[in-house]
Amino acid sequence: MRSEELLLRLGALTKHRWKLMEVCGTHTMSIARSGIKRLLPEGVELLSGPGCPVCVTPGEVMDAALELSVRPGVTVAAYGDMLRVPGTRRGDDLAHRRAGGADVRIVYSPMDVLDMAEAEPERQFVFLGVGFETTAPGTAAALLEAGRRGVDNFTVFSMLKRVEPALRALIASEGFAIDGFICPGHVAVITGADEFAFLPREYGLPAAVAGFEPEDILLAVCHLVEMLERGEPALVNDYERAVTAGGNELAQRAIERVFEPRRDIWRGLGEIEASGLGIRPEFAQFDAEVRFNIEIRPAGLKTPCRCGDVITGRIHPQDCPMFERECTPDDPLGPCMVSSEGACAAAYKYMC
Image 1 (cartoon, rainbow, N blue to C red):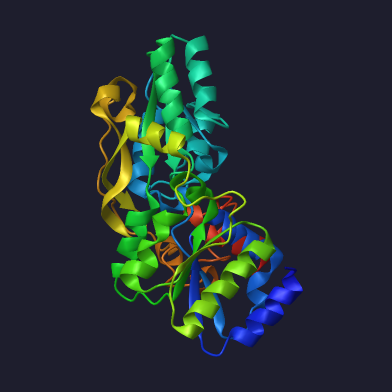
Image 2: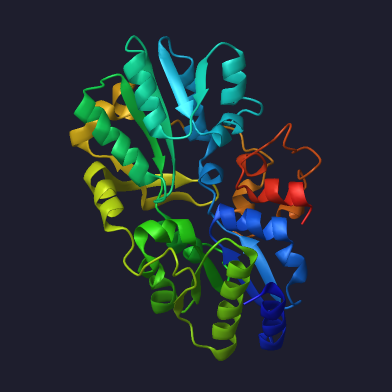
């Protein structure tokens, strides 16, 4: 169905006011790029959720990565988004550490880091494993391959997180006022659409797994509004061309073999039980936290950045007093302004 037809259908469906949340940074960027928010009926409001893995990584965890980057003989490798993410001190990021002489490298996959480690055995290579269930299988595969090859100078600092516990924590948080969820298609490819069945079943909140084209997102919005107007919450898979009910079992087995759920810290949500993926003890030789005795220290002074409120749907990016004034892509206060999936970066780039 074309966008024009979906918008007409949505306009006819909407009788009340509804707040919907997309839980994927790629959705956030697609919504901003296509101007969907400006086209929706007045009664439908879209808010961004904790769906950008770079954005939910707290400053105190980045501080640990920054400290690691300046240790003698250590190379820190990360996806490009991570280089501009500040720690708890403004302006302190991996890009600045690299400019000061630290060996920080941008990679496209953990396998790239494994190859580097094999080629330079005199150095220790640490991959910053950021992401949700989407990137966890690739990181698991790299750890398994490191064992197979016998590469002992390769480790992973796991910042990987699980979406379901975060959504439960968000729903239980003070002031929660979201009526329905656009669920992340990339995550659902791995976990399966049924991963999100708890939303209507336990909380009475409609959920739609969506693809990433504007028509995909509008279709999901239509289904959510239709369910809300009827008072019949359910789970709808609007991304059947890529997502099955049960997901990718091979990828799930790889995650389960290498990682185990652990309590973890989320920007904007705090500590959440079983929301992170820690490396299992049997793979401790590839765990950077074990090898380098990494300690996550409590954050110091609070930053005026309201990234945490943005990714929990409490405010829109433009509602932050720092947005476009004290916080820009060139001089960011928080990760929402520098990640390619960040809500603030999307709002700044497309002025949505």
